[in-house]
Length: 105
Length: 103
Length: 279
Image 1 (tube, rainbow over the protein chains, first blue to last red):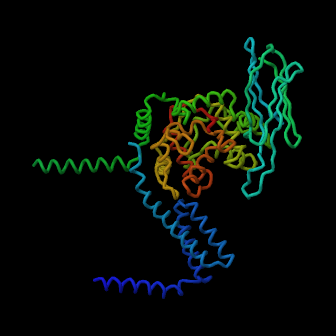
Image 2: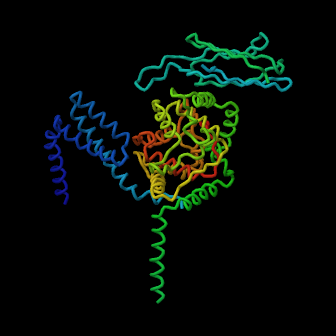
């Protein structure tokens, strides 16, 4: 049992180390893909009239980092923006019905 | 343009109570505008209230006083119907003055 | 047999409940809304709710009474009166656009316009009036609009809110949408209007005392010391949105107008107290 665990840990560590090189150095293409996904999500949030300020901030930060050719940071910010935008979409859809529970009766 | 000063002085026997409101941005010089530039200092330095040729109240305001300042004080020795003159000067040399009757 | 009766009762109850949730009954909402606040604050006289935080906090109230002897909105009020009396280039005035020449009518806004099927707020009506007379629209959040509405509110002080919801499906839909907006959570902080103004009136948020939703629109526009200036209803709603870390909508967006309609209807019978002064 112990040896299996040890082997698993070793394998995981190896996987992480091996995977590292492919994670490093995002390209402009990675950034454009991430940005497009984030902007699409934010547009949907806009249609639901429920955009969040931090999403806008992350989008702006992503564009700024990309302009400075820091695509690692740009991708990270764009992904953050997408996560936030999706959360705001989830909130809007959930509240579409959930608001009724808060009404004074 | 309408006066930047609103003043009301009411006499009740012995004392006269004065309240005044002055319209002024009172920029401290430490605040930034939306684009991140410092808003230059622009504030009232001295406010004076005169009655019968005598200064009855002087306030030295400055950068620490809020926008559109308000002041209230009372003094003795005035009668109903007397004139009370308010004046202020700011750090850019602008000024305003207004005379009102004590009620 | 008994079981059958029980089951039928359960079905009936369930039906009754969905009926409560899904029909639009402004009058029932109005009763429940008012009862909630008057029960929660039995010592606050009904008409005092329009004074917002001052109805909740004795110390604040003392300061306000002193401030109100010489109110900070005085300059805006004077400016509004002057603007209101100054004719447009074509010789007409604001008064020509309104019933009773615009004097003492604040309590009737917002109203449902049967022709266009939309909610008309006072701020929207003022800009439409300007545009109809060949003038540029004013910014909804800046001083000129606040000055005009301050003057119009001042001439209506003490008049009870008299918001009507005609039995027109479009009016009811607008009311329902405003109600939904009021109770829906939004922004990264996941706050609804009601999270503060229904759940927590009288409580502190930072150094501020939260105002009750009942009568909250009666004091607008307000001089807000925090803002260092006047704010319109539009400004109040926009700032509330950004405070929840949401992106505010455009001023006078349909949602904003509808929520103002809902809140004003909930305040029916309470006196106009604007312009107001708030910390």
